[in-house]
Length: 285
Ligand code: PZK
Image 1 (cartoon, rainbow, N blue to C red):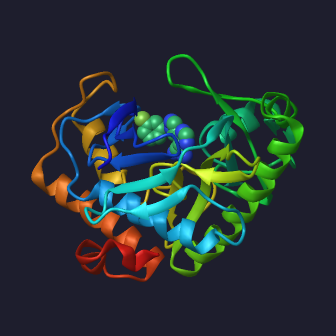
Image 2: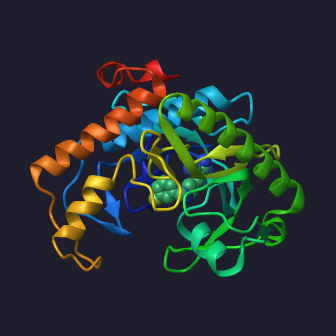
């Protein structure tokens, strides 16, 4: 008997308190593009993201402990340890894209990291870099440098968090590349338990917290297509949508094509048939 008390609601998921020590995270099938949640869900998207997170948590627990306690039979909910969350998101970037590319082009730096001159959009960086961000008022992320992140988290907690994040990124990026997916960057959220242990929380290395690019056709010098959302983005923009609320309803072929891309990402990365996950989610653990 666990009463669920809604703690927070994100764009595409909810988080409930079960008791003082445990939370329930539930991933919906909602999809956002250009920061707008669309009116049409993508069936099983929440299950794909939940299964991928659980897969990575299970395979990286020797690198860094994590908040995962149990995976629900519905495939979209997880029971997690309740932590004191660090007030920064820890983004690890292995490639030059998004706000990193914007900042690099303007200044030659990203979050205080001075990079070699002449890098192209989407190019692989000499080494992965950590670019922390804070949640600004309107839900938008504000990039900060690592000294500010250390001030906000405490130097020891930040140092542990960033080392864990880089190690998990390296593990996941290598695994993904062997399966035909470039893990361009990924955002981690970490927290601290009662005993002061830094742990990975939230979701881990999903398409919603990362940039996944198809390795086939990867070429620096231009933006790369998103492994999961490119059909949705292309279709939405082709309608003439101005990227403000509300977004357009998606036609069936865009929904089914996008679902297929999420399922393909799950199957390539986990090596597990998605139907097996639906029958018994714990196969990813
Ligand atoms: C926590 N969020 C963000 C996630 C939302 C909002 N293990 C944890 N302990 C304490 N707090 C959190 C977590 C985790 N994960 C995460 N907010 C609080 C978030 C999902 C849906 F609406």
